[in-house]
Image 1 (cartoon, rainbow, N blue to C red):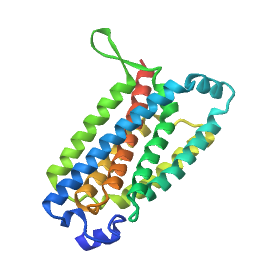
Image 2: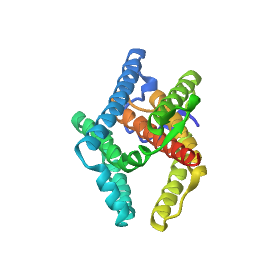
Image 3: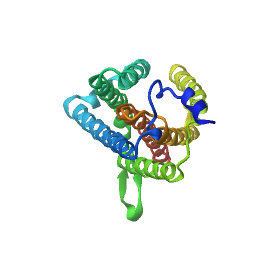
Length: 254
C-alpha cells in the first residue's frame, strides 16, 4: 500500500501531516505522551475497579441476578451500552476542536470498560491456577502479567521492524463484524463459544495491538496522542479479557 493510499484509508489523517512526517522531537513527544496516557488509563481502570468492588455490593448483585435469571438480560444491556458508549468516547477522543473533549472521551471509555469488566472480574475472583510446589495464584494477576508481557513483546516487535501495518485495518474491521455477530448470538441463544474462541480472540487482540502500535508510528497526527492512547488501551483491555477468560476455562478443568 502506498503512502498516499494509506493516508486516504486512514481515519486519523483527516487534515495535516501524520506523525511520520513530523520532526524527530515532535515524534518523540507524541510517543511519550501516548504511552504516558496509556499507562494513566490502565491505572485509572484499576482504581475504578477497586472503587466499584469496595463501595458496592457486587457479590450480592451478581448472586441475585444469576439466581433470578436476570443476568442474561443485564449482560445484553451492558454489552450494547458499552458498544454505544465506546462509539461516543472514540468520537470525543478524536475531537479536533477541544482538548477537554478528548480527555472526556478517554475517561468515559476507561469508565465504560471498568463497568463492563465487573461481572468477568467477579467470576474470575473465584478461580485460581496451580503453580509449582502446590501453590496457587489467582487468574486475575496471572492474566495481568501475561497481558503486559504480550503487549510489551508485540510493541517491541513493531517498533524494531519499523513497518507500517495499517493494511491490517480492513481485515480487522471485517473480523470485528463477525466477532460481534458471534458474541451477540451466544448471548441471546445461550451457547458457549468455547476455549478455541478465546484463543482466537487472543490472536485477534494481538493483531489489533500490532495495528494500533503501527498507527502510533505512522498514521496519527502529532496532536492525537489521546485518541492513540485510547486505541491502545482498547486493544490491551480486549487482550486482558480473553486471556482472563482462557485462564478461567483452563483452571476450571483442573
